[in-house]
Image (cartoon, rainbow, N blue to C red; front, side):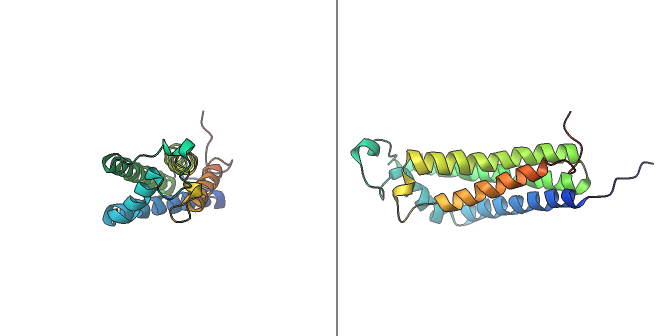
Length: 167
């Protein structure tokens, strides 16, 4: 019977950092589901661009249909929930010492988070819908924090010493 190699500090770090992002995403999704209206208003204001500089060259981008705004918000919640589940599974694999699969599933989940916060909130919300212009409905700082944290966790998960490398 082969023994399991001892966990390294780096392996433990990858495990716990992945668990931290999984917990964060689970709490975000849970909060958006149980307190639907709070961030629904956030998404509506960003997409409507109603607190931006109202530049005619940009306002054609605004989405004012509440149905489309709410569809976008539900899609965000679904994405958050799926990312949380993938990261929870990745964390479970890290704990079980299934390093190759843990790295793979954690990478999928972390990329989902980075796409949501990077492409979704920073690029599309921040630039396309000019969220940076809003004093009231500007989530760029929070999105940047989550994007950077997830990126650091992704890098840690791929450092030599967290487990075997992909073939």
